[in-house]
Length: 285
Image 1 (cartoon, rainbow, N blue to C red):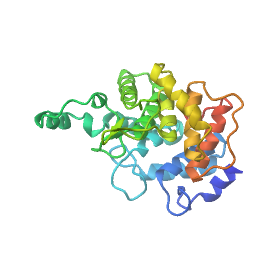
Image 2: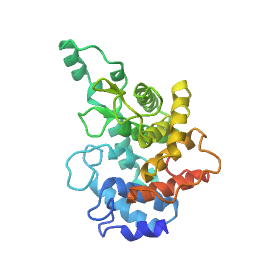
Image 3: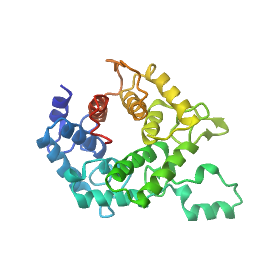
């Protein structure tokens, strides 16, 4: 039924909206991945053509056609199979990710802070990824970039890719909340400890697959607690992925029927997570 919903919501230009209206890169990538996993190649190929047509000269992707800036959605495009996206487009997306970093990790920013006499923040030691270039790094885009590069590293184990994955994971570890889990950005804001959120906790745990530490264990406990509490489709999808990445999804877990915020990315990611739970991880493997 969900696959029929995806196919029925495809716009005439080949892309997908979040709910209705014009096509956007994020829902289109998720829909293409879900359709490829289901063997529905015709609508997936139409979606791939839309994605290829919206790529920018710098190798990245904008959030939708007509936007003249590459953004975080490039990480999603890099998760598409290179044999489907095309080797050249895929390689350019990976190169864009390797070259992009949060503003606080740049030499210019660090020099400015040093000249102003500001103390060195340990959260700035390791480069993460921003939502848009020349902005600060955040947990969400950093997690997605790590997932794309980790998938690429399994294809091409290059030292430059490994180094960027490792530094990105250290960025996430420095941004872990005191109790475990992740907020969207910093550990503290306005002098207060930040509380973790379910969707960012799931995303970061998925990006930290294979990383074992006391902080990871605390975060897994937080994720299991969130799993029984929240009813957001986006959050539940990422929590399931994060727990699956560490082999910690509770046995016999049943996805709740009543969830909120049902968008096309929610539907698509839910289909991909369901496949991963069956051992067929088309999204990250």
